Length: 267
Image (tube, rainbow, N blue to C red; front, top):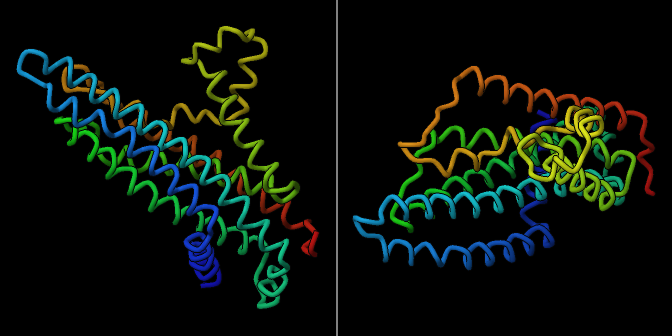
């Protein structure tokens, strides 16, 4: 009951957070501008160029959704870092703990509140992907649950990581580190063109330590057609999602351990 109350209260604060609302509005405007070519593709599609246009439409959908999904990762990290730091900075956390609430319950409630926000974000992102494909005269061939579960697991990693860092660092610094980690994880990934610049001696241990969020990138399931479709088996999905959940769980446990010894007085 206590954890659920904290989670819903945390979600409510996000809906009133002016900074988050402002960033979401600006980002939505950028996405709307990128949607314009979709109507043009649909207008020039004929029977002769249909396969080529299908590839172009699905490719553009994948690019737009990659950007939207990436913004979600940053939103999860910032929301997680800011919600914990705000409670400690304002001193309201002392009143919460007086109820009484265990520190791990407080942090878990905050984490669930962030994930509730990201669940709604993923649902909107899911609808956007189908809307974009429809505007281009195509449809998404991927299994729907993949486009819902994969980003949620990835956002859980970033949220838990940000919570771990904000227990010892300023929220802006925590967000910056998570952003740097996300970029570095892509750079050292096996499918990255930039990975050749790193020696194997350096790249391999860095790739093993950092979260392999490229494995949890749902955009690789978007730009596919029936002809080129390669279904990932349940074994592949299970291993990939279990890896992501385990990484998020470990980060959250470390955050709880660090938060247990954190001075809760105002900084």
